[in-house]
Image (cartoon, rainbow, N blue to C red; front, side, top):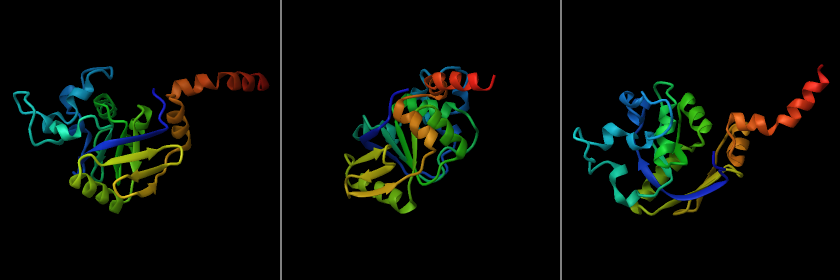
Length: 196
């Protein structure tokens, strides 16, 4: 995984509540067993017509938001099944952060395990972000993982966010769970010698 310390980016606004994992990545795409290619099918049913052509009115097809690394979504993002593929699709598209006022627990853990930072903000701060982006598509957010803060650069408003300390350390150092254990190998081996 890549290290995540801080990020400033424009955002893709998705002000829809209760987005479940089947909407994030429809079940017909779950046959693959690795992460490659899932980003192409992120929000596929909302993003493409039946003939495969892009739907002009869906936000990911709006050139104004090209290159954004932050997805800002409505309340209760990632509900539904436990499929890890939803996090794969978000990461595969290029999102490094998802912001919402509430995430389903399993999705939140899957995102963290795949190098995507889920940031929980207050309902009022989420509304402010949507308002700022609606006024100017070039609005940026800064997400500072070290200080656990997110800032709307259009207004200067900031909030802090919570994160599991272990997952924070993994993201800051670009480690998945296996890398983390391998990084502690000397300590583990030294401890094993004390219990023999």
